[in-house]
Image (cartoon, rainbow, N blue to C red; front, side):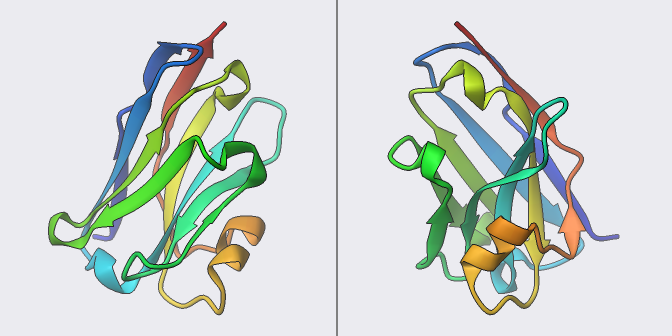
Length: 127
């Protein structure tokens, strides 16, 4: 069964850091582009960061540039999102997603294109 499981969310003060993990099972992550998305109550889902297979091409939404870093360890079938300098407006449920074929990594993030989605992990940043 194809599955993505996120972990690493929690409660942190503004300015703090968290590292989210997304572990894949049932398929080989290395051949997929992976994206991190977030959705706060009453808001649309937003593409935060996406990374191509191979890890050389990434995309970040403007609000997280310079603060978040996406990386992948294909040997562990895992993708990470390092989040630094967290702000209260980063509070959301964070989801990872995987897509096999995408013409441009930006499209995955901007249009939320994915074949598989995880269940999400809550990130809460207090002021």
